[in-house]
Image (cartoon, rainbow, N blue to C red; front, top):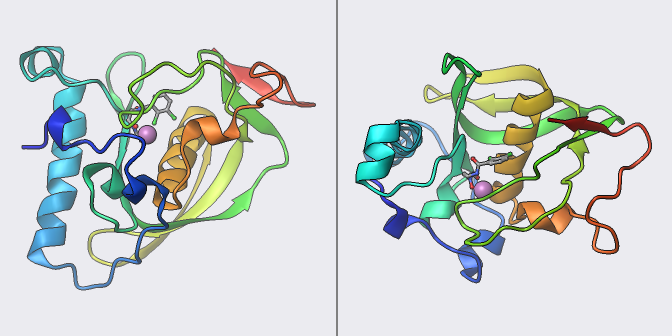
Length: 184
Ligand SMILES: O=CN(O)CCNC(=O)c1cccc(Cl)c1Cl
Ligand code: NI
């Protein structure tokens, strides 16, 4: 199972490279990696297992965060009652439409690859349409807004070598762009 020791931290170039397109049919190795990534997220969201294995909680994980430069991310988003509202492996994901309107989380963002708090709003498109492939290679288009849109943009950024703090306004980290929504 994947543990925190397997998570690549900032400073490692693999986090700054554009990841390689995933080809189909998936190799057994790539299938196992996808399963391990989703299992990591589930374990990280389970208080008992997270404590036992010292896991930081995550709602997404990109392959290059575990040192594999492939364009795939696991996303596991629970709602306030711990009901899963999104559980997807995003393979070769692309944002094909995005709103002008921006959104940012009021408490900022965090990243397993960043062992420090970086305060500030991370402005992202409030509504996006993504096109990606599932584990069978079928193309899926999904429109997301708010928190799900934020998480998927955080992951797709990883796959393109970006980290969340690249998007924080350097002059004023809590600058609110015109019409930007702040999500508490
Ligand atoms: O890339 C994934 N991670 O680094 C896992 C840890 N971070 C989070 O779960 C997280 C936390 C806050 C906001 C967003 Cl958007 C995300 Cl994604
Ligand atoms: Ni991250």
